[in-house]
Length: 173
Image (tube, rainbow, N blue to C red; front, top):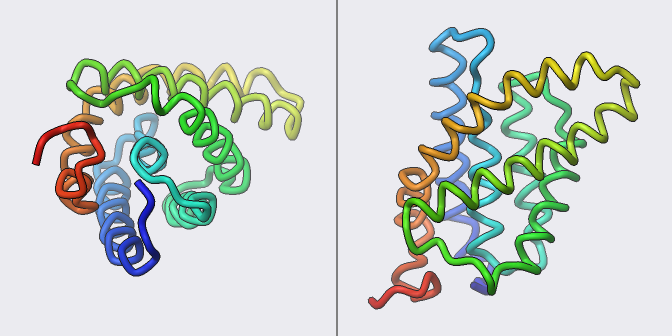
């Protein structure tokens, strides 16, 4: 949906606050090898539901907020997020988030695409396959967890962004 900046900024700030809360929770739980990147879900949600020429800027800010809580390279993640957003933009008319099962499947597919693109960038910068293999073993449980929680987070984001009231998700008001 095409929105004006005055409609985007408040919803986006609340979305960033949700991201900060999720990042603090995953950081404080203390699981060393299990830190699901909720920023990916937020970028995917914005890509599915928002048509705005400045979405790349929203992705940059989202990735940078995530970077404050992790050691992941925000530049690679931002570029990856923009590429995945472009893929979603081209395929948006073919996809509908009409059920939890479809949401889980679509989120998993785009997380795999995200992982592949980011791994290519990391390989070119580190020239080390071991790092990517280690990242892949952490990616599997994290991506499954994110896919399963995606319908719930997307419902929360729907309430924040009020897309149902604007009738863009294909549901009646």
